Image (cartoon, rainbow, N blue to C red; front, side, top):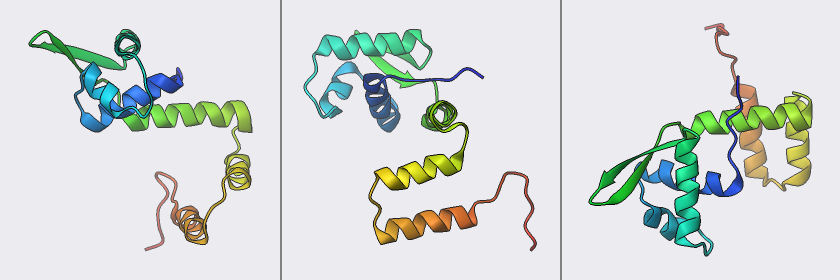
Length: 128
């Protein structure tokens, strides 16, 4: 399976488009937290369209983009790639490194533990 990776700016743009569901270059420009040129965003969106992440329709001479891929598809693809390349496909190494790098509150730590305890592999049956 081909990894669907996005560079930092591409991911920023896609997050805005996913949130809005349909977006123009100006919509994206207004919602990105840093100062970027209109042409930078327009070029990025055209590139994302060429790569198959976005499509567009023309509305009164304005390109209105919509996503062609779900956010979860990209998130899962990029995480699988990261897991494979940096952590030798070990979820344990990933979680251990995450806990070393990111300070978690007791509440967040408890929620993470609960997620792990409640996780059930697909197709695995419960004893109910």
